Image (spheres, rainbow, N blue to C red):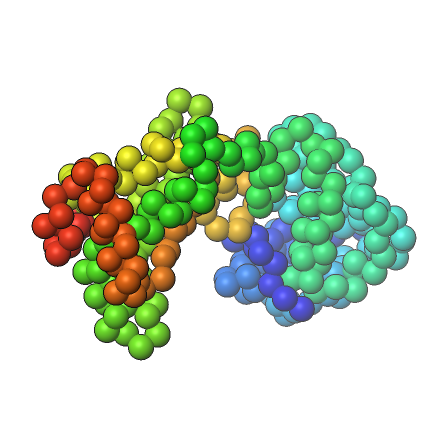
Length: 292
């Protein structure tokens, strides 16, 4: 049994008998249930966190006829214990209801965490039938292409820029595993937005600012090799179910992280930049970026 990716803060399951309903509620911490209770009318009774559905249903005092899982605040999934059938998914916000894409049996024998994992998979398989489904990722995109230059030209140009300034690699050179290499992440242009970039050094908690001359060189490389395209990203920035309508249109990132340069590579990079006559060569011996 593994924890479900998008565990809600509270799980709610309605267990229906022929004449009454009880409510199984659980808090969720680190994906696992805590403080499980069954509400029968005005009474609230504690039950084991690992209880299976049929075990909690015994508190009805009559046969368990059906179970409704409050999968999301506005989505319910219903099934009939003991029957082989496709659970029914109902989206209250959209007023839409569809049977899951495949039949299931034995759901009543699962503990709630295992049940949530199974229903999560069933919902994802059927989500395309809803007009605004919950999802983890969004496949809508405009694939990356270059309106000028090429990805090879972009990578080569950025690599020469970084290699020309070995001070950027001083932490990596002092480290045996050389993991502290600078990275430049290029962001594609899309719609009316220009391409951009971000620089990361060994301290991820610091925002870095280029000196004007180095920033101009970076912009020059990107303008000659302009990536264009977009994706839709999850607004939560972690694996979590979110309505498709809430996904954010965004640039496609292109990380470029050249290896620590050799002396020959440093010399070649500086010669190329010097021939471009766009930079004062005395800057090669400085740090071209600073904390913002």
